[in-house]
Length: 254
Image (cartoon, rainbow, N blue to C red):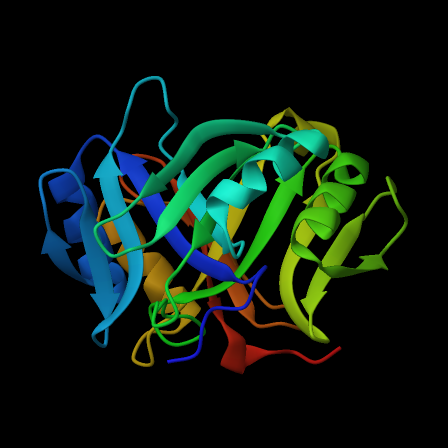
């Protein structure tokens, strides 16, 4: 397998209290299968690792953490600090020869950095897997240069900086990798953080997935709607952790 490119999403995990309940929910909704350990569970889809689940350490929020490939977690520590960020969790090795850390960017959003071995695998862009991720922050001007200088993105501004719609798309080798949305108004009161988008399964469109999530004890924060990138909905699992679902086959066009 090819190494995960620097700057690309390389992993995601959820810190939670009710681990059996979370496993059951995401299995029923997205078709994940689990390898369970007392301290960490790994979800797979079509035999490819897609996410992790771990016990929450109080007062850690119950939220998805996105990890970006950095090419060297230990080597990134001083760079993070030089660029105005903070290291929240020091570089840590995993049983699978990965190394990760958790940082806080200058806008206050937590983000993981990941260093995978050359044969590291992370399922993306297929049914039941991560399809897109974007940073929601009230301070895009602080976030953009931090990530650009840390991981080498080329960034395209969409909308007016600090305007009604302020969004940047981050590219790796001319391919869109991530997005950044500047929250305003009531949204600016939310804690800065990453939003993850899961591709729906072939036998479930977004509307069916939304109904299924509610039946499984989740909730609907934003009803299904169409966009140029696909039909999306914002859902929560039974404990209130938010995530988007998207059907990229249902694009409406630019």
